[in-house]
Length: 165
Image: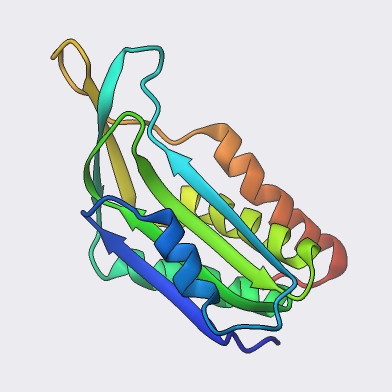
């Protein structure tokens, strides 16, 4: 098991400053070989959407982020990891989430970042409501089968190696 030197877990209504998040995560860690980040951005869906209204379950969302980060640290030799997610109104073109992992080598950082994003999409208590560009009725965004399939590959790998938790 790897002991993470630094973690950053947050839910915020403020716009994300990706450069500041990544800079803060790596500050003073001179022995990293790789930093991989994912930034999720609100799409306009071809001009159909003005944005999204994001809601979360306070306290539970952050606890789930921490659980995901801890599990990533148990699976890969991660030095530091961040999960920062917006809540409230997010307009098309604005960033919704940043996930980053730092490690000695790129393979672990890529895997941990992808693992964290896959589980955030399916297990973190967040809900999205579309804000239509034309002011018409809003609708909640449904869970996607593709997101469940992405998580399944991690659990299938666990079953294949006998590491299921």
